[in-house]
Image (cartoon, rainbow, N blue to C red; front, side):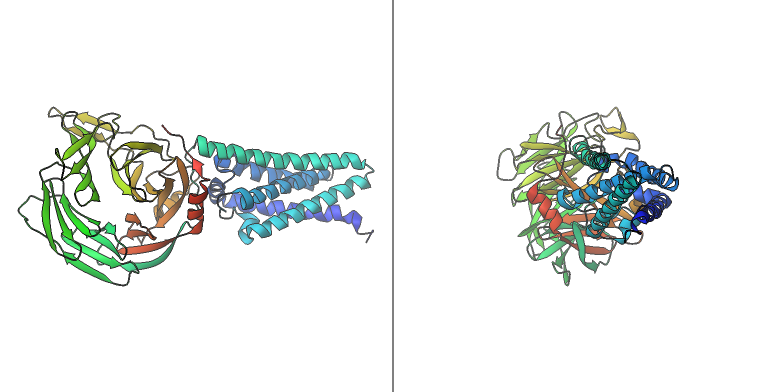
Length: 504
């Protein structure tokens, strides 16, 4: 056994050469994927660009040091320190991260995180033993060896811890548009093939999903929550002699609402009954509407005095019926295109949300449109990048294609699911061609929880989605998909330990 001890440093030396050669080459050969995966790391997101290059260069440099007899001792010290850094990195991932990311290439692709932690610890031990034997063979003081080993390994661990806290601060307080993709926050459960790709979500109740149709606007389709049965109802408004242009059906159990803000008119009917009675006519023109209860609504309309977009409350039993809430929608340039966005709501408690299409902001209010929060999405577009021209009749026209930031929103409880139009740092362009990206935010405080993909169905992209009480749903082409909410998402909600964003 004593005869084998002097050979241990050489054996470990060759082992580290093979290990780091393999690791560096595998990362370099699939560098784009490696950089993307580093970008999704919950510890190194903010430094993905620098770290992705630094790791490969450092691994190759250590290989060179190990290959040269005069410097292989320095290479052993460096190898041990680097493996210590990798070890503390995985330890932090497993114990202090809100989620565990996917593998980062190389050996990690073949091992689980716990197995890799054990592997790294063994490498640190082997490296330390090899250094100790080599130094002892050269009659160097044991105290000096212990200090050098301890200092180099401690320095590498401290560096990783520093990067962790620094990266967390950047993501939470000064986000540089770096997404973190959660490990399956929603998981596809069931799907249903639809007869067309013109459907949108009209609402839900305890037993059914309800779909409206852009192709057949009078048809309301009810789908059982288990996606097993469907039924269609042809809505018959009591008066069809109106110039309908923009019909939309909204379900707010036990009623459905047949609306067109260009007329403007609202019909109401009982679910299951095709006959809808007119409850509002010419009270206010509107482009979007949400239902608070059977006689109270929130609408997006134009303020006649300012010619800007505005939110208003429409109460059928009050006088006046319409109350404008000026200043809720914030003007940046023209007050029309720059303020365009999506009107949405969530329950438990009831909150009204307005998501801007062309800037990184959404506003949250109570049911009376008293603003509670002005929150930001992780994109850095604070000012709408649009070019408009005001015509002589007061209308505004867009004269150049705008930069769209957000596409749509659906909210449930304290969560808002926002589909983004912009690619973040270190994201794969190929992946964006295959799927839509949904970012998850808390709407009661400034927190970004993470992101996930909704994959295309052939050439069809997601056209609508609904964050339901029990499930998440999407419509992709002619396919209705049901997803289960997963525990990591719920746990993030409970702990509140997520990426905090700055309020404006």
